[in-house]
Every structure is written in C-alpha cells, then in structure tokens.
Image (cartoon, rainbow, N blue to C red; front, side, top):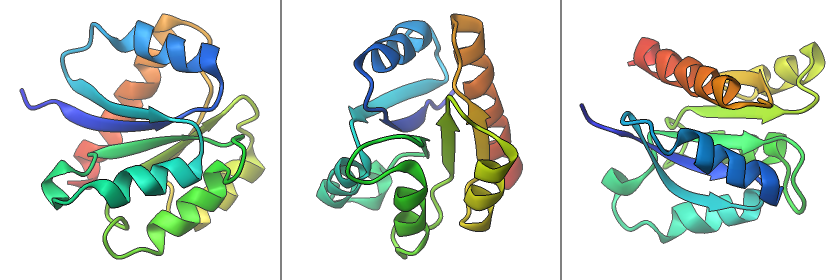
Amino acid sequence: MVKKKVLLAEDDGDDNFFFVYFLEERVDISILNCVENGLEVIQFLDALANNEDLPDFILLDQNMPKMNGLETLKYLKGNARYASIPVFVYSTYADQNLAEKCGLFGAALVHQKPTDKEGYNKMIDACIEMIDNIA
C-alpha cells in the first residue's frame, strides 16, 4: 500500500497534537508537515522542487491567522502547479455556508473538526475515499 502524503495546516497546538497523535497508527497516510497558516502552506509547497514530492491532499483549518482556509484554497486552486491537489477544509464551525463557499472554490470536502480519535479517523477515511473517487 502506498501511503497518501498529507499536508496539514492547523494553527491550534492542541488540535495539531491530537491530529498527529490520533493518526500515528494509520498505515495509509504520512503527514508531510504541519504548518500554522495558509502562508506557510504556500511556502512549504513552493520549497518542494519536484512535483512528485507534493502532497496527495491538503487539510486546511478554516480559522487560521494571516491566511485562512478559504483564502488558501482560492490561492491553491488558482495556481497551475497546485490546482490538482485535493484540498479539504475543516472547522469547528463547518456549516452549510462554509461548505458552499469552499465548494465554489474547489474544495473536495468540508468537514466538521473532529473531537476524538474515531472522528479524526472518519475524517481521514472520507478524504481518502474522496481522493480515490476522483482518480
């Protein structure tokens, strides 16, 4: 099985810790990096010399400083190098309005922020299923 490479953008230290802690046992994903905002997403991606090193998908927290999830999504989908990378947005306040806005700009899925290990695993399962359906 080839692991899916994930780039995580999450500014909350506790949520970042839980994300890594709850998912460390998974054999189907590899977390490339955890960055704190959309600007750091762009910097990380721009620093990758080879397209083969790009993540298989990106998880964006909606509520981040400097550049939030929706702003980052717009940038990524408007950049030819990154436009084909599936982007998932998650938030504590993932409502229909956010889902519609993110969908308009190319988000593969908008998900409610998980609160436990089962929730994190379900979110990743949904991301992987969506990627597999796109391919």
